Structures are given as structure tokens and as C-alpha cells.
Image 1 (tube, rainbow, N blue to C red):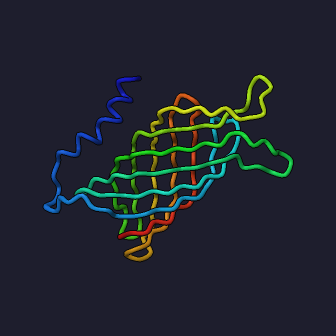
Image 2: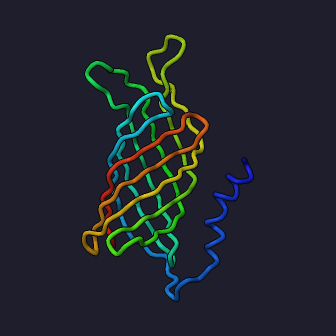
Image 3: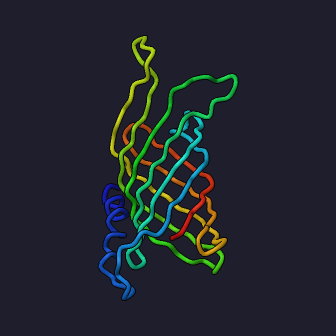
Length: 174
């Protein structure tokens, strides 16, 4: 199983050597806002907010992203624990399905921080930090040359608690 995981994460980087266009400048491409929900390892639902900056080199995409999330608290559930924060660097590609529909996929590496429930009678949350391995896919519809709407699915594999996120995306192109 470990062999397949290593191949999965290294394969996209093998594509970096293929020069598919004469325009080989590393350039800033977009800023995105992400709002949605998700789950934390089958234990509770979350509300998520994220920001990202995207860069391009030929047809290769690189992103720096941040996602902040907390429990989706209802009026009968006031448990304040379960917040998480992640900062990720991702590599991916974008594919055109139709002229009005785009799909992109990214894999990466990042920092993951989780506020766990207190132990030993403490009133304060215990913060745990680790390395995360994010995997995400986005379905996007270009509205104008400078604006795209989309739906994102994001998963972060880590040693504390795996998290899933999904929701709407607003991408501003430059």
C-alpha cells in the first residue's frame, strides 16, 4: 500500500519535465475564496472557510492555501472543541471537459493543527500539530474571463484526525 501512495504523490512531479508550451514563465494566476462544510473523522460536522493563491508554470498549477474550520454548532450542542487550521502547498493540473466546464486536481503537503477536547479535568483545549497530506478536486464554471464559480472537495490525511471539506468556490483570475 505504501508503494502506491508514494507513486501517487510522485507521479505529478514527473510531469514537470515535460515542456508543453513555449511560455515558461512562473506567474500569478488567481485568488480564491472557499466556504463550505465538512466532517472530522466521522465525529462531527464543521463549517469551513479558506483562501488560496494560485500560480502557473506552463500547464502546471501550484497553490498556497489556508483552511480554517470549526464545529457546526447548533443551539443544543455548544461544544467549542474541534477547530482545525491547515496551511498547504499543492501541485496539480486543470482539465477542460467542455468550454464551460473545468476540472482540476491537486495533491500536496501542509501543516495541520487541531484543537482537541481537554483531558484530566482541564478547561482548555489541547492543540495538536502535525504534517498533513491534502488531496482536492474542483469542478469550475467560467462566468467571465476574470471570474469562475466552483464546487470543491478536499481531504486532508494526517496523524491526528483526517478531515473532509466540501463547498462553494469563488475564483478571481488575473
